[in-house]
Length: 113
Length: 119
Image (cartoon, rainbow over all chains, first blue to last red):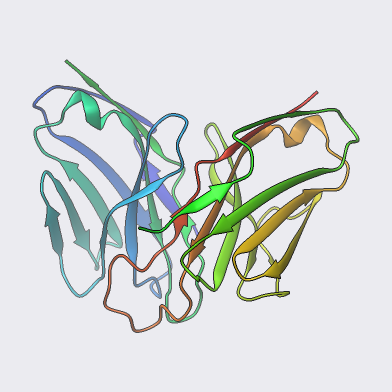
C-alpha cells in the first residue's frame, strides 16, 4: 500500500527526443506527487510537483501527467538535452496524514548528444 | 533558498567505530529526515523528527540512532559501524503542517549527501 513503483530503471534518449518515466501507486490517500532530479554527487532536488486536483502540470520542458483513476503519474521531458542526464525519482505522500514521502527506486536517464 | 548542509562529503571509517553524521538546515523547518541511498534500492528512510527531541523510526532504523537537540540540527549516529552500512547518506528538511497547503514547493529539501565507506 505504501509502495511507489517506478519504471524504467534506466533510459537512454537521443538529444531532442522525449523522455518518459512512469510511476504507479496503490495508496489512494496520497495527495501530493513530486519529482526529484539528482545529478551525480549531489542530493536530490525538487523538479516539479502535482496535486490530484489537476491532470497535468507543465514547467518549461517538464510535464507531469496524472491519472487518478489508474493511480499513475508520469514525467515527460520534451526536447531532452544532455544536461538532463541525471537520476529521477518520483515520490508520493499523504500530506493530510504524514509528512513522509514514499519514493520510487529511481530512473537513470542518459541523453546522448 | 533552502539550505541543508551535511558535515562531511566523504567519510571513511573502520568496522566497530562510532560514527556521527551531522545535518544543519537554515530554513527553520520543523521536520528533518535521514535517508540512505543505495544503487537499485532508491531512497530508504532511516529516521525522521518532527520537532526538537522528537524522533520516529523510518523503514530501516536498525543499527542507527538519531539526536535532535536543536531545531536546525539533526544527527545520525552509527553506534558500531559495519561494512553493510557503506552507503550514501542524505539529510532532508521540510516545513511542518503540509496538510491543506496548496503550494507545490512545500516539500523536502535535501543536503548534498555524505558518502560513507566502512572498511
